[in-house]
Length: 431
Image (cartoon, rainbow, N blue to C red; front, side, top):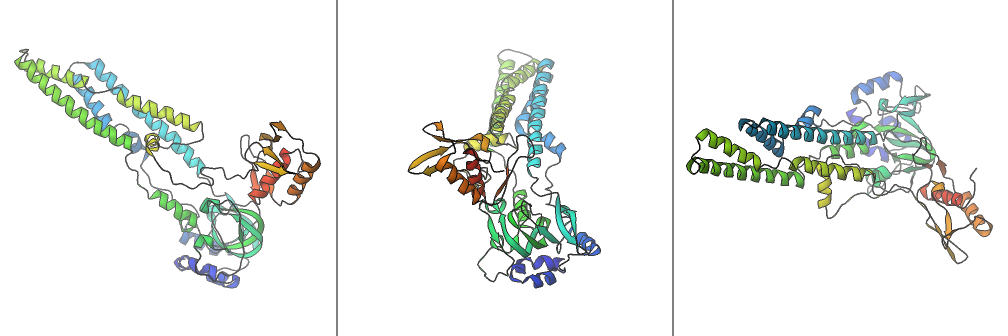
């Protein structure tokens, strides 16, 4: 199996018959016994789950950072200073703040996990020469998969049969335009793996056409898996806010202890108090200088910012990230599907020297209309002929949302889908 993995880079250079031999399979796919043997060697077709920090430690970390420790100490000092009510109040503030912070981050983590479901649950394969519907995680190198319009690919595979196949690779490249694929051997040496026209990759979607491909990479050995591993290797660093609070905590601790020491001396030599009374008085001064309300105030303000961003569909995983984002002067990120929704939209129609605006964005035709001078334009006459011609020239299909509030699914070229939508906004029926 390691030999197969090592040959992946050379797979695009081989002919279809050579691909079958190199991957130890045939036109009818693997046998059930061979597939089981390969499963034991290569493992399941799933992305590796990062170890991460155990939940119990993530929970406790909200009570063990510098400011939290300072509050624990302040409560203990208040208790020694015979101020039990103040001690309990300080400790309760610390506990409530820690639980609240953990709950916010826990909810965000669950939401992010739900967003990671990019691979399909099932895939069509050939096993023992018969077409089967297989759980995607059971794919192994050498499996022959069947591809058709609308399928989301579950593993990296080499095409051996194609029929006008186009693939949306925006999850890997950020470009929404479908890429033409074929099953011919690639002899050029200046192409990256993702640019290979005879390769299809996990996480991408078939825009149009049909095909057949032989799996050559699964799980972490896919291009998608390599990207996932890069994100998992990024270590969390303290945010600017955490560094500032840590620095403030150190300064407050030094100042409060110093002032407490000064008042201890003054209480003994000027007020002529006993050492015990002077010590209790000094402890009270130390507690007075500790800002017990700072931590919950910061946490609450960050939580409010998280809620405001959530209403705008921005998910924050860590509370401290809100302040970090505010410090950013430049953000380098992929545009398509990240800053945009990866949906093409017709914004204007020019006809007979006239400019008409198309309102609404995305593939929901009910969200917009064609207007001129602020008034809706009826899709009749020349405009109807223009929109009809545009719609008839399209091979794309629009699938309605599967659930309320969902998004339309496009099968085919996104530009053609945008033309279908503007035709509907003009009053044409696609049925």
